[in-house]
Structure formats: structure tokens, C-alpha cells
Image (cartoon, rainbow, N blue to C red; front, top):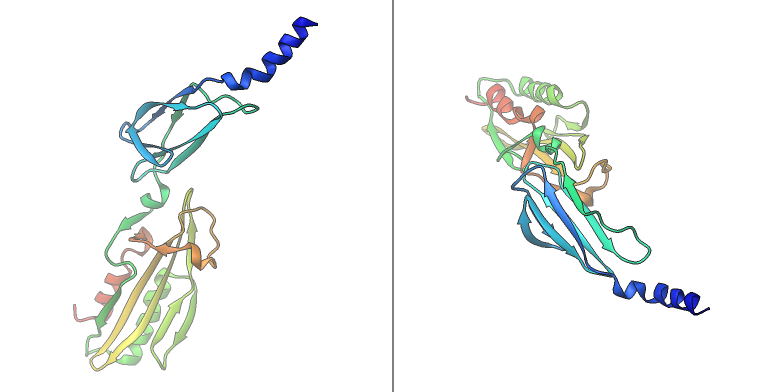
Length: 222
């Protein structure tokens, strides 16, 4: 009976003697930032302590790569954290499919060459747009306003939506404002209708990188 009683006592008090666990964090990129509970503590490789009855959040980040995050817990009833955790970092596919640019989300004024007929110019505008976008949402010849539907593309950790907005800036000389709207959500498979989840992106997908220059070349005085 004494042995059974002792075992019961030991089982009851064991959780109070749980020791801190050590996890060795390493990444395939030696200069990747290791952020622990919101604080940058090192790069590439380091050991972290997981106190008893606690959890520790670890993020591994590097520009141009996917972001990695894992939580390690040292609590009763939960699996012990591993002795080692290796992060094999992959390139950010959204960044690889895009370029950084100063042409995103800005109105560009394009003065039309005076030798071109205004009716033919509007046709050219539509032709350029359909070279890049499948669907036009609004096209009003009378007001010279055109807006494409959103073109959306999902990546491993991001969703990008892109559209063109064209409007008349002034009639004399004939000038259009062209805006290439490029937005990101920061998550995969975001609905194109979730406006509140998208933000201006200082990049554009490579397939749209020549949109503004095409308008300038085919309509302007270049």
C-alpha cells in the first residue's frame, strides 16, 4: 500500500518538476533571422529554451524566401519539443514571379500623339488592355473610362490581384491616365472579393511589367 501511495504522489507532483527543454533551431539559409516570441534573437542557428508549462513561438525569415513559423510547448499532456528543428527554406514563388517597380498603384499621364485619330486611339487602348487582361469590367467610350476585372493568382503564401484603370485626364491635348493596380494579401487562396485583406504591393507580376511602356509607345509622342 505504501508503494502505491508513493507512486500516486510521484505522479501528482511530477509536472511541478518539469525542466525547461532546449531546442536547437537551424535553417538552410545561414543568414535567416530567428525571431522568438516577437524578438530577433539570432540568425541561421541557435538554441532556445522552452520553460516548463510554457510555449515558445519561433519564426524563421529571410527576404525573398517563404516565411516559417512553429510553436514549441513544454506542457503536461503535450508532446515534448524536438531536440533539433531544421527549416529547409524555399524561395518565395510570388517574388520570383514578380519584379519590384515604381509603376504600381500610380497614375501615369500619357499624352496622345496629335497625329492619331481619337476614335482609333480608343480602339488601341482596348487592344493593349486585352493583350494583358482577359476580362474588361467597364468600358465607356463616351467618358473614356475603362476598368478591367481583377486578375488573380495564388502562390504558396500569397495571393496577388491586378487590374488596369484608364481614364481621360484632359481632352486638349488628349491625355489619358493609366493606373496598374497591384495588391497582395499575404495568404494563399484569398478570395478576390475580400477587399479588406488586400494591400498595395510595390511589385507587379512579370507578365504585366510592360503594360505602361506599351501605352507610352503606342499612344504617346515617343
